[in-house]
Image (cartoon, rainbow, N blue to C red; front, side, top):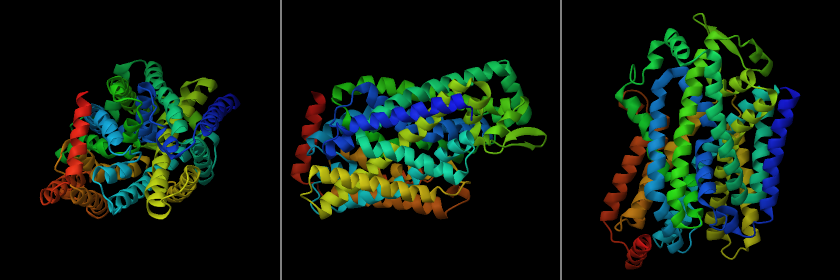
Length: 506
């Protein structure tokens, strides 16, 4: 790495740690640590939700998929854009109101327990276990992305790069909690957005224009130009179904809970939706133009950064398609700009890992430690329980990520399906259906999570090639409704539901 690039990159890292230190002194209790005292403005909430949502796969995984398979992978982006908008439109405001009405709930398991007046704590514990299970894999995907970045940027071995990336992210999350995560996500979201707009434009200009890029891709593989050629209906449904996952992602919907007022939702929705749409456009074009660029330009300089280029059927290709954004940053830009772009990749990675670690640590502190073992634990004790949990979860995720052949997109897709299948139907029904019961919610979470694990891990071929989120979501929805219809919600639950509806009208 050029010394100038290294300095720029290092300044960014120091800046993130400074934010963590500042927010450390503004974190006094568990509500501050996991929800920022419900004081996020619409801009911070929107970009924080977007940045924590997109993760390293926005700058590594999805561009790599477009690079390798062409425009057929763009269906996923369409599904995500629709899902993100619907999440802001239907879930954000109602969840913000309902969590405050329901005993000022500060985590997803906390909300579910309060929503259904579950004195047994079973719903809280099962929800927390599902969060810990799938977030461990999700966090691991971020660790893999971080390792690939440090490996290509600093010429480090994969294992060394993995541990350095893990230490950087865990450090500021431990210090500042939710406020550090939200504000770093805000700045990281801006950086990611600018990078995704600038990189494909500069690359396209270097290529000579859009027609040249399309021609180059067509010569490599004409099917890469077509969104439907060679793509079966199952593949299209699976890609669009990524949008279903939004309703059950704890690290995203917790931003809705942290908004300072339900009245901020429309402005946050506008900011978040446009950030998402334009960012996904940039991602698609980065992968598409990248395929044309690498195949037609002199990219021998990439070997200096540990990015391997191979020849397949006489065509220059990246050995690892997920490094296309890193390759562009090193080839096309001045070292200072390259440092900023590499920081943008790290932003995407860090903004998601920190959110996942925070939600996971809150599950341990609030939903296990306090609820089961130490009901009278002090605020300071709970914050430290969360910090210890953060370190433990990060360690397990890093160990899982130690395989250098791990795919960022594969790990993300599994975890995304797990949360979407387990929590998506439950959150929607809890917010909009008065008749849902505790037993129905519990059955839905268990069936949704189990379906994703079994379908994604053991069933392959034929109809089973359908993305595991689809059956997970549908089976969870059906079993929740069926079991709920067998019982009757308590009058106190109905009264709280009606109170939420009235507050929504206000």
